[in-house]
Length: 206
Image (cartoon, rainbow, N blue to C red; front, side, top):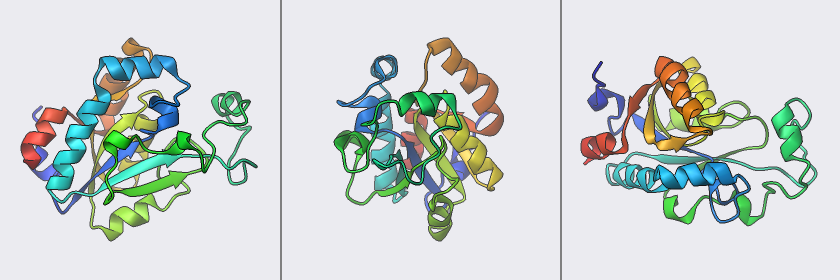
Protein backbone atom coordinates (compact mmCIF):
# COMPACT_ATOMS: atom_id res chain seq x y z
CA UNK A 1 0.00 0.00 0.00
CA UNK A 2 1.46 3.44 -0.89
CA UNK A 3 2.56 5.56 2.04
CA UNK A 4 1.01 9.02 2.32
CA UNK A 5 4.22 10.81 3.18
CA UNK A 6 2.62 14.19 2.61
CA UNK A 7 0.55 13.82 5.79
CA UNK A 8 2.80 11.51 7.76
CA UNK A 9 5.94 13.62 7.45
CA UNK A 10 4.44 17.08 7.11
CA UNK A 11 6.57 19.97 8.42
CA UNK A 12 4.98 21.48 11.53
CA UNK A 13 3.67 18.13 12.72
CA UNK A 14 6.68 15.81 12.47
CA UNK A 15 10.01 15.22 14.19
CA UNK A 16 12.91 12.92 13.43
CA UNK A 17 14.01 10.68 16.30
CA UNK A 18 17.62 9.50 16.02
CA UNK A 19 18.07 6.38 18.10
CA UNK A 20 21.48 5.76 19.73
CA UNK A 21 23.68 6.98 16.88
CA UNK A 22 26.48 7.46 19.39
CA UNK A 23 30.24 7.06 19.23
CA UNK A 24 30.16 4.15 21.67
CA UNK A 25 27.47 2.32 19.71
CA UNK A 26 28.44 2.74 16.06
CA UNK A 27 31.29 5.27 15.99
CA UNK A 28 34.98 5.31 16.71
CA UNK A 29 34.48 4.04 20.28
CA UNK A 30 32.00 1.30 19.39
CA UNK A 31 32.13 -2.10 21.06
CA UNK A 32 29.68 -3.83 18.73
CA UNK A 33 31.73 -4.76 15.64
CA UNK A 34 28.95 -6.71 13.94
CA UNK A 35 26.61 -3.73 14.17
CA UNK A 36 29.31 -1.36 12.97
CA UNK A 37 29.95 -3.60 9.97
CA UNK A 38 26.32 -3.86 8.93
CA UNK A 39 25.83 -0.10 9.34
CA UNK A 40 28.81 0.55 7.08
CA UNK A 41 27.61 -1.94 4.49
CA UNK A 42 24.09 -0.47 4.46
CA UNK A 43 25.28 3.17 4.47
CA UNK A 44 23.16 3.80 7.55
CA UNK A 45 25.06 6.90 8.71
CA UNK A 46 25.06 8.50 5.25
CA UNK A 47 21.35 7.78 4.76
CA UNK A 48 20.49 9.11 8.20
CA UNK A 49 22.55 12.22 7.50
CA UNK A 50 20.60 12.92 4.31
CA UNK A 51 17.32 12.58 6.21
CA UNK A 52 18.47 14.91 8.98
CA UNK A 53 19.77 17.54 6.55
CA UNK A 54 16.47 17.55 4.67
CA UNK A 55 14.49 17.71 7.91
CA UNK A 56 16.46 20.68 9.23
CA UNK A 57 16.09 22.51 5.92
CA UNK A 58 12.33 21.97 6.13
CA UNK A 59 12.16 23.20 9.73
CA UNK A 60 11.46 19.74 11.15
CA UNK A 61 12.93 19.12 14.63
CA UNK A 62 15.66 16.51 15.09
CA UNK A 63 15.85 14.80 18.47
CA UNK A 64 18.78 12.54 19.36
CA UNK A 65 17.61 9.78 21.70
CA UNK A 66 20.75 8.77 23.55
CA UNK A 67 21.68 6.26 26.23
CA UNK A 68 24.14 6.67 29.10
CA UNK A 69 24.98 5.34 32.54
CA UNK A 70 26.30 7.08 35.63
CA UNK A 71 29.49 5.58 37.03
CA UNK A 72 27.55 4.57 40.15
CA UNK A 73 24.66 3.25 38.00
CA UNK A 74 22.19 5.35 39.97
CA UNK A 75 18.93 5.71 38.07
CA UNK A 76 19.55 2.58 35.99
CA UNK A 77 18.08 -0.88 36.37
CA UNK A 78 21.12 -3.12 36.07
CA UNK A 79 19.93 -6.62 36.93
CA UNK A 80 16.51 -7.01 35.33
CA UNK A 81 17.70 -7.94 31.82
CA UNK A 82 20.39 -10.40 30.66
CA UNK A 83 21.75 -8.07 27.98
CA UNK A 84 22.13 -5.11 30.38
CA UNK A 85 23.76 -7.36 32.96
CA UNK A 86 26.29 -8.50 30.36
CA UNK A 87 26.97 -4.97 29.11
CA UNK A 88 27.59 -3.57 32.56
CA UNK A 89 30.25 -6.12 33.39
CA UNK A 90 32.38 -3.48 31.67
CA UNK A 91 32.51 -0.66 34.26
CA UNK A 92 33.32 1.89 31.55
CA UNK A 93 30.36 1.07 29.30
CA UNK A 94 28.65 4.24 27.95
CA UNK A 95 29.54 6.37 30.95
CA UNK A 96 28.12 9.86 31.28
CA UNK A 97 30.79 12.46 30.57
CA UNK A 98 32.78 10.26 28.20
CA UNK A 99 33.11 10.41 24.43
CA UNK A 100 31.23 7.14 24.05
CA UNK A 101 27.84 8.76 24.67
CA UNK A 102 28.37 11.61 22.21
CA UNK A 103 26.28 11.73 19.04
CA UNK A 104 28.21 10.98 15.87
CA UNK A 105 29.60 14.33 14.69
CA UNK A 106 28.33 13.69 11.16
CA UNK A 107 24.75 13.64 12.47
CA UNK A 108 24.84 16.49 14.96
CA UNK A 109 23.76 20.08 14.43
CA UNK A 110 23.74 22.85 17.07
CA UNK A 111 19.98 23.28 16.70
CA UNK A 112 19.18 19.63 17.41
CA UNK A 113 17.60 18.47 20.66
CA UNK A 114 18.67 15.55 22.86
CA UNK A 115 16.66 13.20 25.03
CA UNK A 116 18.86 11.00 27.23
CA UNK A 117 17.83 7.90 29.10
CA UNK A 118 19.55 5.94 31.85
CA UNK A 119 17.70 2.65 31.76
CA UNK A 120 15.92 0.36 29.36
CA UNK A 121 16.00 0.17 25.59
CA UNK A 122 13.37 2.58 24.34
CA UNK A 123 13.28 6.37 24.35
CA UNK A 124 9.95 7.42 25.89
CA UNK A 125 9.63 5.64 29.24
CA UNK A 126 11.31 7.57 32.03
CA UNK A 127 12.32 10.52 29.86
CA UNK A 128 10.80 13.87 28.87
CA UNK A 129 10.66 12.93 25.17
CA UNK A 130 6.86 12.81 24.96
CA UNK A 131 6.53 16.18 26.70
CA UNK A 132 9.15 17.68 24.40
CA UNK A 133 7.42 16.44 21.25
CA UNK A 134 3.99 17.61 22.38
CA UNK A 135 5.40 21.05 23.22
CA UNK A 136 6.57 21.23 19.59
CA UNK A 137 3.15 20.24 18.23
CA UNK A 138 4.46 16.93 16.92
CA UNK A 139 1.98 14.18 16.05
CA UNK A 140 4.17 12.01 13.81
CA UNK A 141 7.72 10.74 14.31
CA UNK A 142 10.25 9.47 11.81
CA UNK A 143 12.77 6.99 13.21
CA UNK A 144 16.36 6.41 12.17
CA UNK A 145 19.20 4.70 14.01
CA UNK A 146 19.75 1.60 16.11
CA UNK A 147 18.87 -1.05 16.47
CA UNK A 148 16.26 -3.27 14.87
CA UNK A 149 17.00 -5.81 17.59
CA UNK A 150 15.62 -3.63 20.41
CA UNK A 151 15.63 0.15 20.13
CA UNK A 152 13.68 0.76 16.92
CA UNK A 153 10.83 -1.68 17.68
CA UNK A 154 10.67 -0.24 21.21
CA UNK A 155 10.52 3.31 19.86
CA UNK A 156 7.78 2.44 17.38
CA UNK A 157 5.65 0.57 19.92
CA UNK A 158 5.93 3.29 22.56
CA UNK A 159 5.19 6.03 20.06
CA UNK A 160 2.10 4.25 18.74
CA UNK A 161 0.86 3.60 22.29
CA UNK A 162 1.21 7.34 22.99
CA UNK A 163 -0.83 8.25 19.91
CA UNK A 164 1.88 9.24 17.43
CA UNK A 165 2.02 8.15 13.83
CA UNK A 166 5.36 6.52 13.04
CA UNK A 167 7.57 6.05 10.01
CA UNK A 168 10.79 4.04 10.02
CA UNK A 169 13.45 4.81 7.44
CA UNK A 170 14.39 1.34 6.26
CA UNK A 171 17.84 2.19 4.90
CA UNK A 172 18.78 4.31 7.93
CA UNK A 173 18.27 1.54 10.51
CA UNK A 174 20.12 -1.72 11.12
CA UNK A 175 20.24 -4.81 13.27
CA UNK A 176 22.06 -8.12 13.50
CA UNK A 177 22.03 -10.58 11.93
CA UNK A 178 20.78 -9.28 8.59
CA UNK A 179 18.04 -11.84 8.10
CA UNK A 180 16.65 -11.22 11.57
CA UNK A 181 16.73 -7.44 11.08
CA UNK A 182 14.78 -7.80 7.84
CA UNK A 183 12.28 -10.07 9.56
CA UNK A 184 11.75 -7.42 12.25
CA UNK A 185 11.15 -4.79 9.58
CA UNK A 186 8.68 -7.04 7.80
CA UNK A 187 6.85 -8.63 10.71
CA UNK A 188 7.07 -6.21 13.65
CA UNK A 189 7.88 -2.70 12.43
CA UNK A 190 5.52 -3.16 9.49
CA UNK A 191 2.61 -3.70 11.89
CA UNK A 192 3.37 -0.49 13.78
CA UNK A 193 4.79 2.00 11.32
CA UNK A 194 5.06 3.12 7.74
CA UNK A 195 8.28 1.98 6.07
CA UNK A 196 9.99 4.54 3.89
CA UNK A 197 13.42 5.15 2.40
CA UNK A 198 15.74 8.08 2.95
CA UNK A 199 15.21 9.15 -0.67
CA UNK A 200 11.42 9.15 -0.14
CA UNK A 201 11.69 11.62 2.73
CA UNK A 202 14.33 13.82 1.14
CA UNK A 203 12.09 14.19 -1.91
CA UNK A 204 9.03 15.11 0.18
CA UNK A 205 10.88 17.55 2.43
CA UNK A 206 12.73 19.16 -0.46
